[in-house]
Amino acid sequence: MLPSLRIYLSDHHPRAIASARLPAGTSHNVPYSHKRGWQGDGWWVSLQTYDARHAYVYLVEVFTKRPLRFGLECLRRDLRWLYPLQGAFAIHDQGGRKALQLTADEHIRVLSGSGNYVVIVQPGRHLLFAFVLDWGWTRRYARGALGYLRQPFPAPIIPAIRGHLLTLAHLSVKEGMLMDAEIYWPIARITHVTRQLYEEREASSETLELARSARNHIKDSLRLDGNPLTVAEIADHFGVTADRLSRAHKKHYGQPLQAYLMRQRLDTAYRLLSEEGASVSSVAYQLGFSDVQAFNKLFRKYFGVAPSEVRNG
Image 1 (tube, one colour):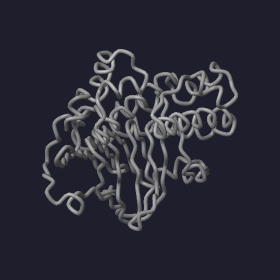
Image 2 (cartoon, one colour; image 1 turned 30 degrees about the vertical axis):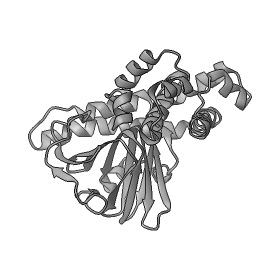
Image 3 (cartoon, one colour; image 1 turned 135 degrees about the horizontal axis):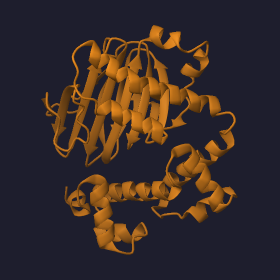
Image 4 (cartoon, helix red, strand yellow; image 1 turned 90 degrees about the vertical axis):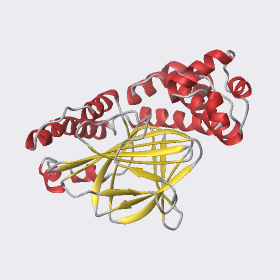
């Protein structure tokens, strides 16, 4: 297939260094992919692609110590399957209006035409899997359900989908048609599971909406006042039991709500350290960590750097 997306940095970062190698720190090295990398002061972007006969695969990763923006060009009209596994990508049109928000752990399909956009990411690490499938090939197996393919609302990235995406990222190199055949299997499994999620959506819309609302409430609370919430407090806000809320989140997102809370606390810590220059101890205590050493250990495990490095960077 022909490429569907193009990333460009020169308009926003004329001094960026481009390379055919991946930046140090890239979390996935797709063996069979074509590689591009860009680096600047306190940030890097990596792009790995593979051109199969009926699919074009993308893996985009960004790491930055400060808010970063770069260009994105959609080269033609395509249905794009987008799977953000970490971080968030805000996509704006040339007029500055937000066209799309990609949030970690929520898949979305977008049928869009050609055009130029600006991608904005906040401090931290951001990881996006994406692929485009040949429309005739996709339509052949849709069995008349083309409406489901065009619906843009998000659906959870459950563990089964995440597992197939990671399989896709780590396939060994094969020659010619064999390589294409290798990538079609995990893509077929991903699209099959994704369709099942959409077909089940109506039956479980109430619990899905509860789980999604809880996630939004957590983000809003941390962004507005920086104070961490407990599962019990969130459940009380929505008038349900903590057990019901936890089950709903686990059902639709495949992880405990407590784990999601911890990740959001760490993402908030990164923002406070990098953007506001707050001290490590004050950030740790503000976000409910009574042990600064434990906070340091978790932060380094998640981001790969110490909190002090982010603050001093």
